[in-house]
Amino acid sequence: MDINQIVKDKKLVIFELDDVLFPAKDYLLQVYYLFAQFIEYSEQKSAQNILDFMRKEYETAGAENIFQKTAIKFELAETYKHNFDLLHENARLPLKLLLYKNMLNFLQELVVDRKKIFIVTSGNPLQQLNKIKQTEWNGLEKYLTVYFAEELNQDKSEIFNNILTGNNLSPKDALVVGANNFDETQSNLSNLPYIVSLEIYK
Image 1 (cartoon, rainbow, N blue to C red):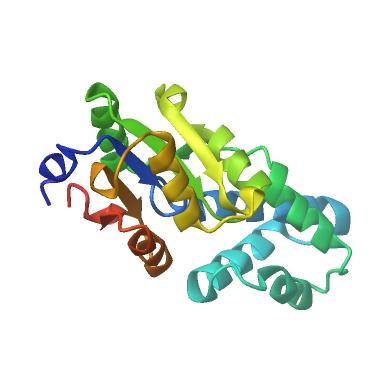
Image 2 (image 1 turned 90 degrees about the vertical axis):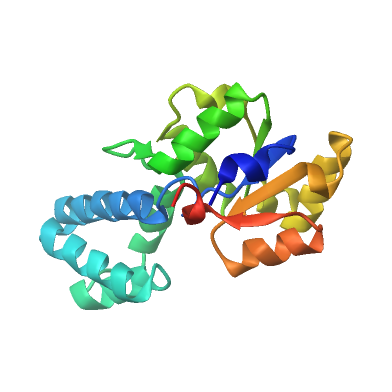
């Protein structure tokens, strides 16, 4: 895909975070690691066994209900759910989150070409902000404008429209880079061109 041709006449590009700029699992697996360490300290249960179980569950079934499955497997009290949820919002990660190489290159080119960069992200705003704070942006952070859909209580399509209006642009002047059908649907509602992130420089 010739991304340079696609963005040539664009004035701004809008991104999601998870599985667009970096792999969502890079954050979650580190949260699971920290939770496993906490349980080992609190309950004297093997952190490695817990982490191995959580990683396997995540890879086969995703993040949904992963605490409940882990609690049943290792006989953990429901009260630990609070600690688990809190870690998602404020975990200090052992390792910084790294952008996909293709997305890092793309973002750098957008900055050189003086195009505006927006991030419009769904999910828990505190968790998404924590991800942003712990990402290695390579100096790009000062060029980013971020919107949290849940915090604004708006659909992404509404935020897209507000971004266009605020910059006096039409849909043809912008591009949305996402990773799933939801992102594509929201883009279509705003008549915005859409591409899948992993197709860039493929």
